[in-house]
Length: 404
Image (tube, rainbow, N blue to C red; front, side, top):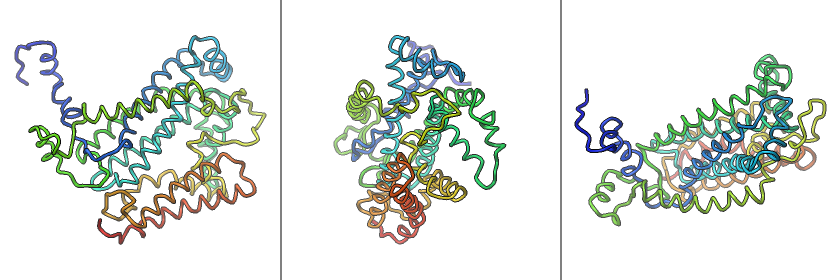
């Protein structure tokens, strides 16, 4: 049994039982961050903030939301938006935060790709991050069902149809997921449970894994420099803060995070108060009706790129391409065969690969919102083929990359 002594105060009493000082050192004051990083490294902290905003606003919305096909639409668009004091504010915060979360997540993801933050022992950081992306996507999709508007209903119909797996005709699996032949009460109840309980718990757990994965290899830096964190931390603790290549997470790096977060909040609340419409689809302002199909069904903007990879092909080929797009990012640490963990600007052909991928993702997103007809259909097909080709050629263009 541990040796307990008479406590000198409440802090000492808690410290003997919970090791508060040790935990604080592990996650804050003696967790070391490289100095040569830029504002893009603050995206992780912003994601934590937006997730907290989603949790807080979601709790307030849950107080008045009715998860039934008869009352869901009215509880959102009338009770919350018109009858509850500041209900409109919480809905705007929740809608804007869900969209902005994906914007920041894409910036965070492509920053990691650009600086090679998935290499040299950082594979678990990348994998846990991509699992977070997938789980956030599931949470966003399930949340999109809850207002029970026209796009909620029909997007749910289209996405769940994917689980029939094309030529395999696994219609029973689709019915099992929906709990009925078409989206109805069982469907709404299940997605409500996923959105408010199961997926948030999974996100919290994966966030813990993501931060834990950072502890041993530490955060990457702009130059890809191999830093002896123990030696540099000793310099810092010995008083040579200027000469050390690292700084404490708290409160040195955290203060920089807070500055970036402050700028982000200006942008965030501008959207909440003045430009929230981008996060609220006008088609979804009509109550769900299984007898009236919208002219053009599409998901939220952050899913458009993968939706566009599905659309241009026949059913079976499209499903294979769609599945490929959903999992391929997980394998990036092994598909990139180079040992260079430096900025893409210093990596020759990989630099071209990175920018083509980013532009292609933007093109796919733009085409996914447009009807698949005429020139738009052709552009979407080409962009989807380019996306697949980029991942196929990645091992070959990085295999013989010169050491930087």
